[in-house]
Length: 171
Image (cartoon, rainbow, N blue to C red; front, side, top):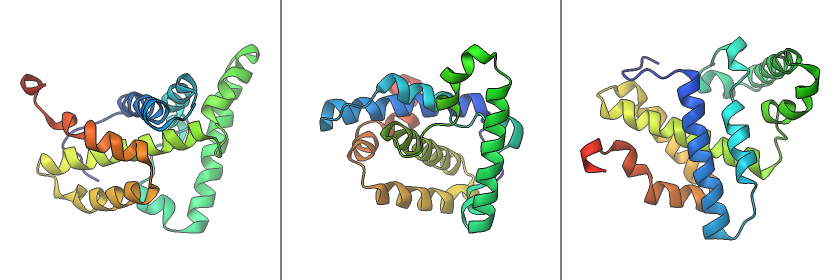
């Protein structure tokens, strides 16, 4: 979609890492979990590393057809393997689980929620700047976040989301 506010992969990854850190801390401090916050942040920093080679595919295309979804996941996995293979041998074991994390881990699920929150913030930001192209995406992303039934996401939305839209003088 056309963007009023451009965003590159590095900016997006940083925002996801900051949100993921907050979600992990909220989960630990408010809801009694014991998530590895440092691992969450590290996974978040590299969560879209494969897009260096693949580019970003729009969510409606990526996830609405099971065959395309499976093919894209394979392409992402190949890109991640390529990135890891480019590292010096002694660093590969460290970076591999960050670039290709265990999809069943709680740390990974937190990063996915943070990525979805970042997408929701992007939709709200674009809509607020007059870009109606993001209004439906914002609604569906909000519904997906609510479907997650994640107390840390709800807490983040209730306590932090509004600060993304305040002018500097109001902070």
